[in-house]
Every structure is written in structure tokens, then in C-alpha cells.
Length: 149
Image (cartoon, rainbow, N blue to C red; front, top):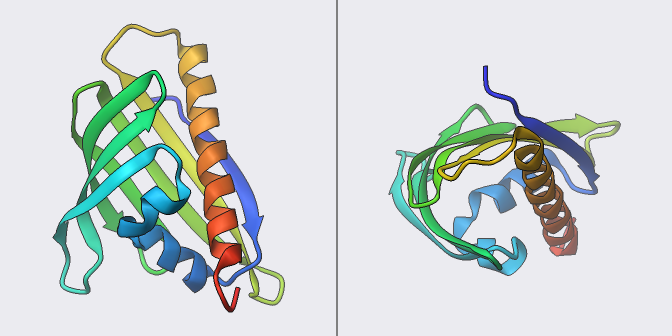
């Protein structure tokens, strides 16, 4: 089994409000930092993205990749890599759990990255941790800045 990195944060919003931001790929450039462009290539019957092309610019790392998404009810989404120039694998998930009275949500982000160039496992885990921390920070800021959150 591949190693992965996981981290969590609590967001002052309901799980539905958090999932609405996660599912709005067109707005990713507004809050993710590294994602410069996101395009939904395929959607399911409910309108949720099944395949998304992402253009990334993280300084030294620039890549375009396509991810396949699977929605597991209203409180989990996972993804896996379809194609990329720099990556062999990019598997991840967001899991949402209501906290206390349901007005807050614990968001757990899990990620496994495998690059095409040789890299020590400890360096990969550190890179995953940076990606996760930035994503959770951006998600929290975006969700909590929306009206009604």
C-alpha cells in the first residue's frame, strides 16, 4: 500500500457549505494558489464533476493534469490521476464530518503523490504536507469568507 499524508482542520461552516466550495472547480484559482486554471471535462447526471483538467503553477513545479473524481454521498470526495506530465500518481480525498451543533465541519484531506523523477519518500511526504496545509488553509479562508458562513 502506498504511503500517504493526512491532515485536518475545522471550518466554521456546515458540511454542505464546505462541499459546495470543494465542488466549485471554476473558483479554484481564487483560493488554491497553485491552480491557475480548472476545467470540468465531464460531469455526472447531478452536475458534479467526474473529470477535471487542472493547470498548476507552484513556482518550480508547473504541470497540467487531469483528475477523475468520485463523490461518496455528501461528505466525501476522492480523486485519482488520469494523466500528467510530471506525476505518476495523485490520489486524494476530502472527508467532511459535522462538529458539535453542525455549524462547524472537520475537514480531513488525505493525499498520495508519486512523481516521475526519482525522489526520496521523506521528501515526497514533506511536499504532500505542504500541498495539504496550503489547500486546507485556502479552503478554510474561502469558505469562511462567504456570506452566511
